[in-house]
Image (cartoon, rainbow over the protein chains, first blue to last red):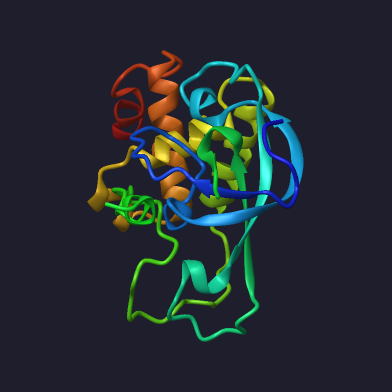
Amino acid sequence: MRYRPGQRVRVAARPHEGHHRTPGYVKGKTGRVERVHASFANPETRAYGTDGLPKQPLYLVGFAQHDLWPDAHGHNRDRIYVDIFEHWLEEAE
Amino acid sequence: MSAARRYDRRVKRAVHDRGGWPTDAAIDRSEHELADWELLTDALVGALGRHGVMTVDQLRRGIESMPRDEYERASYYERWLYSAETILTEKGVLAPGELDARLAR
C-alpha cells in the first residue's frame, strides 16, 4: 500500500479511453485517504476478458464538497467519499 | 503554468460518466414497475456471471462502448441487453447477427 489514512492525495487528471471506475468529477481534485479497503482485481483489464491480476489496492478517498462542487448549496462541511484505485492517485503536498 | 492549474484541465468524459453534468431537467424519482423482459435480462446477465461467461466489468465496458445517441435513447436494461449481445458476440457464444436472425423468424 502506497498511501496511508490521513494522507493528502490528488486524483490523476490523465485521459483514459478504456473502461475505468474513476469518475470524471474527481479527476485533478485533491482529497484525503480515509481508509485502505483491500486489493481487488483490476476492472480496467478485467473489462476486456482478463483475470484482472495483479490485484490493485483500493482506497476510500474523501473530498470537501466545495472542492468538487463550488456552487453547491449544501452544508459547508459536507464531504464526498469515492472508492479509487491506487494507480489513479498521486501524492499531494 | 502552476501545478494546480495543470491539474485543473478538463479531461474528456465518456457518455456514461455523468456525475455533475449540468441539466435543467427535473430528476425522475418515480418508481417504475419492471417488465418481464427486464427481470429476465437481469437473471440472464446474473447467470452469465455466475457461470464465468462474462463479468460485471465486461458488462459495464460493453455499455460504455455504445454509440452516444443509442446510449441516450436506451433504457437501463436495454443497455444491459446491448452489452450482453456485444460481449457474447465477441466471445463467439453468439454468431454475428444470430439474435436478429432468430427474432425475424
